[in-house]
Image (cartoon, rainbow, N blue to C red):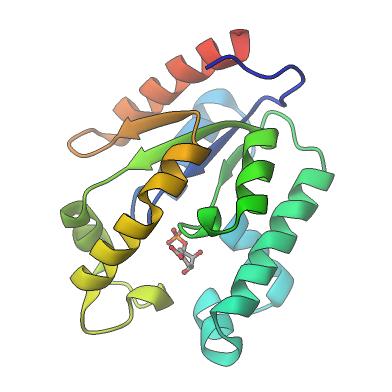
Amino acid sequence: MARPSKTPKNIILIGFMGSGKSSIARELSHTLGYPAVDTDGLIVERAGRPIREIFEQEGEDTFRDLESTTLRKLEESRPSRHIIATGGGVIGRPENCSILRRLGFVVWLVVSAEEIIKRTSKSRERPLLNNNDQRGTIDRLLLERHDLYRNTAHQAIETDGLTFPEITAGILESARYFFAG
Ligand code: S3P
């Protein structure tokens, strides 16, 4: 897992909806004192409306274009010592995956379908899960995305049964190793 020279010292979190990216980003930010950035948050800022509305009014393709533009701009701003949380579908475009790997140490928070259901079923803010077959949608997307997450991440962390501080400690240990390489 050697680090290509000059990779900035950011930690990037990828993973399915409900995998805990935002919560872990907050923990890492708190522990390291690095600012946390959330690509979904940047998209909402740029668009001036919630993700649910972007999907409803303009569709998923427009959202994906905004997501790619946001990532490009984030890379242009040359962040260093940041924690970057991403939307679950960011790995759908190869150019996004290349940017993520150039930005720093990419960690995949692996989570089971059962845990995802528990964490996402009450929210209506995730347009891809706003249907009456949430479990079927989750299973299909997990299958479609599995290799994309795996190939983009420098490190995968199984999160089921672990507390956020335990996951954070694991990430910090791997990051130290990665950045020392
Ligand atoms: C999406 C995940 C969401 C958000 C959008 C699409 C996806 O982010 O980007 O609703 O395709 O998995 P979270 O993973 O933070 O829920």
